[in-house]
Length: 105
Ligand code: F3S
Ligand code: F3S
Image 1: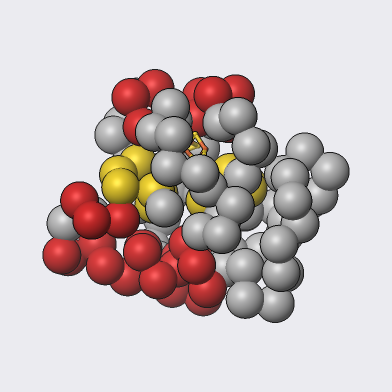
Image 2: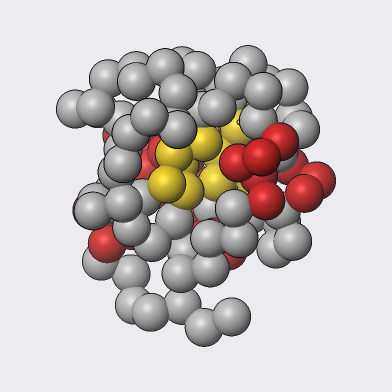
């Protein structure tokens, strides 16, 4: 799966959403999250993010491992909705993300 990391927090450019053929990039309150079970590893989202927030899970820098976990754990009690367009998760974030100080861009 691909993973969204720190540069997305408090920015949410959303260019990635339009590229994903399986609609598996879900918007939370402060960032977007890729569903690890729905992502088909097409990689289309990675180059369009203007702040390079997206990487394949094998390429996520070690200091951003917490985002690897956060992308997966965000969906722990949400299951697999099967598409982001029909749901609204903008009232929530992974606890690690929610606890981050405001990010300047
Ligand atoms: Fe975030 Fe980049 Fe997508 S800022 S919303 S990962 S285009
Ligand atoms: Fe979608 Fe990006 Fe995965 S475009 S299928 S989230 S690699």
